[in-house]
Image 1 (cartoon, rainbow, N blue to C red):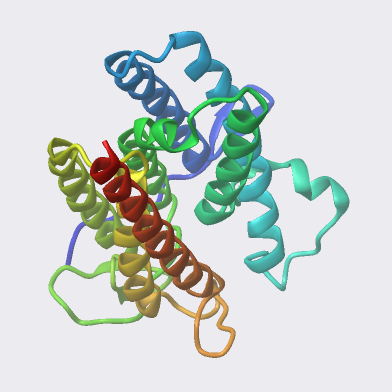
Image 2: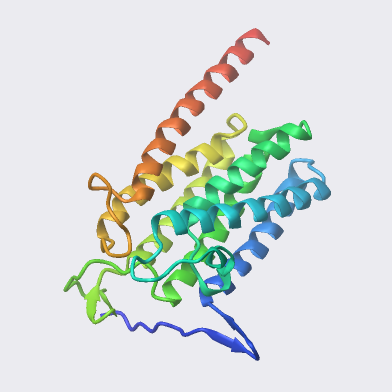
Length: 255
């Protein structure tokens, strides 16, 4: 069994902070720093990236909270309108934040006539790093309990030995990040790195959600809400990837 401890809320005077929220904030700071650094290599101004990050943060928080409330709010917990805003207590869904950030980023680049796919690649590795830190927050707060198991690497959570699903995800994200870092050397078309990340993580998430307990990850037609979403995202990402690759091939032939 892996030694495991769930950390309680952090209290600072009248305020209480969930460790997930703390790690989410650290993930955002780290992603911000890495994105600015990556943008500088591609000749993109720091001001553009920092402004875009600000709007992406707003979009991701709104999306993450709405997705959590719609699909993961505990049935036994009464819900009020003000609960939409109590994010410091926890309750942010990654893929809701991902969709919110994606929509916000796309709209921002179109309004300001920026290259969406080029910026998407700039944000890919920073996104993975931020995602890892967010999952560390999940791990510290006992998020997403796994199915009961007697495997030697199980953790004791909610009265039983369980699969450390969040730990699996952290390891998987580190592997995906390493693959994306190596793929940077191929110098493919703009958007390649981002689309590869979407596909790789979609496969990982489809598998991992089968190890989560149904009480916290409800099933619809046998799959969690996130599994339905990532299947759709995988198909869309693959279609766009093929389309962009074909466009680049035609451009090289015409040059």
